[in-house]
Each structure stands twice: as C-alpha cells, then as structure tokens.
Image (cartoon, protein in one colour):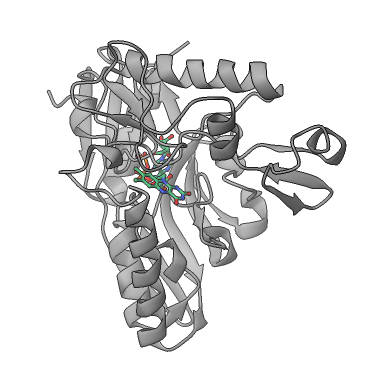
Length: 314
Ligand SMILES: Cc1cc2nc3c(=O)[nH]c(=O)nc-3n(C[C@H](O)[C@H](O)[C@H](O)COP(=O)(O)OP(=O)(O)OC[C@H]3O[C@@H](n4cnc5c(N)ncnc54)[C@H](O)[C@@H]3O)c2cc1C
C-alpha cells in the first residue's frame, strides 16, 4: 500500500488501510459515499499539498481524486476536481482567461482550490468561481453551490467550516486579457515564489512542505496597537492582518530552525514553511509546529492557526 508520505508534498504519513483511485466523477461519488459510510477515518485527497497525515494511518481510507476534463460552456469554464491547478492556469493564460494568472505555481488540484480559497500576490480564486458542484455528505446528494453560498474568506470557505462533502467540479467565469500579458505575469510570480522555496522541486528540501504552515492572524485594531511599531500590518474591514512570518522570526525562531535531533525544520528561505529535510516523521513536523505556536503565543499573546489539514492528530 502506498504511504501518505508518497502522496503528500511534505512527504510524511503512514500507509492507509485502503486507497481508492477515483478516475471519473461517478467513481468519486461512489468511493466517497463508501468511505463515509464505513468509518469516520477517511481522507479525500488531491495532490496532498495542504495535508499533514499522521504516522499511523492504518485505520484510514483514502480517496485519491484523479478526475480530468475542462469544458467551455458559453462564457463559463467547468473543470473536473482532479485537474492539476498549475496546468489549468497555463490553459487559462493561453486562452486569455484573466483572474488566476497570479495564482501560478500553487501546487494542488482544481477541486481543492475553493476549499481554502487559494490566494497569492493579490488574487484569490473566489473572485472567479461562479459555482461549485458538490457531493454533500449530510444530504447524500449532488448540489450546486453558487459563489455566495461558499462563504469565501481569507484562506477560508464553508467547506473548511463544517460543510462536509467533496467538490466534484468547479465552474469559473473569467475576464479577458492578452494571453502574452497573462503568461508574463505568471512567469514573474513563479520566479518570486521559487526564490522563497514556494515552487515544488524534488531536489530542494525547502519545498518539501505544505507551503505556509500558519495563516496570517487577523486581530482587532486595539490589539494591533500593543505590538511593536515595525510589525507589518494590513487593514481588513475593521480588523488588522499581521504577518505570521514576522511574528515567528521576532519571537526568536530563525529561518532554518529545527528542534534538536529532528528532521523537520523551518525552510531556510521562508519563516512560514515547515519542511522535511529527509526522513522526517509527521510527529516531528507537528512537534515543531507546536513549538512555534507556543513561542509566538508566549511572546505576543497570539495563537497561530495552522493552514494545512492535520489528519489523524488529536
Ligand atoms: C510549496 C507550496 C506552496 C503553496 N503556496 C500556496 C499559496 O500561495 N496559496 C495558497 O492558498 N495555498 C498554497 N499552498 C497550499 C496548497 O497548494 C493549496 O491549498 C492547494 O489548493 C491544495 O490542493 P491539493 O489538491 O494538494 O489538496 P490536498 O492537500 O490534497 O487537500 C487539502 C484539503 O482539501 C481537501 N480536499 C482536496 N480536494 C478536495 C475536493 N475535491 N473536495 C473536498 N475536499 C477536498 C482535503 O481533504 C484536505 O482537507 C502551497 C503548498 C505548497 C506545498
């Protein structure tokens, strides 16, 4: 059986009890219903770029989404969940479909993109999603959720807040722009991402990660005023977003840091990424994450919230 270490970008996690490959939408529906029925211990998996699976996954059933297809319907584009996000950005750019060019270089599948409303360099996928076709676990049926019902927020959606199920397809509505300009923007973004170890590269351990491990915390204006004057801050509605990377470094945890004897370490290029230096266990990854949380909480009174889905941990 293939271990989760082989199916996730941070390369940790044990062998599951069962692994189902869903190549068609019908299979995805069938396998998802099956694993939901049989146990609480299941995982719906795309490219595994936002998942830390525990070392003992032997009670888990995993459904791997490999459905493919891109369909143009009038001014909309309907995409199967298993399409690879980066390739879809290339297709969008080539067709002059504007709105996701700055999201180039983000690993993962199209189906996972609404889950945490992927975002980077000033763009969020929610701005071009028209609707999501969703197998709702509670209802046991396929429904279509228009954008407003997805309740998108910063790295957030209704799917992260308890609406269980599986995204089958995503329907996009794009603006139009010059394909060459879109491509140039994507290339510029990828170059910036690569410098931070945020483009997957088998040979570079700094990219054996889940990307950013913590979300940038959003606090009240009055709390933000208690922080040092040089703390980076952005206003969002009547609150303030802080830089998690800045908080970590100012709490005294430098890039490249690891706990004694551990194979998990902070990226040498980016303070927000926890990486696997080779042979790390999921336990080591989570121990480092806890250490960072405690250190930042002690220094600033802020509890950093992990961005990836931690599977099988208490
Ligand atoms: C190097 C690197 C850089 C990154 N940079 C960014 C970035 O800039 N911005 C950003 O937002 N994210 C970033 N990420 C995080 C990650 O790429 C995204 O969250 C991506 O959308 C995850 O896709 P995936 O297919 O790998 O999802 P997985 O990791 O397989 O799954 C993630 C979660 O979504 C659920 N899920 C997956 N597919 C479905 C589906 N079809 N239906 C229901 N649930 C599903 C899973 O159960 C799991 O809870 C980065 C990750 C890495 C490794």
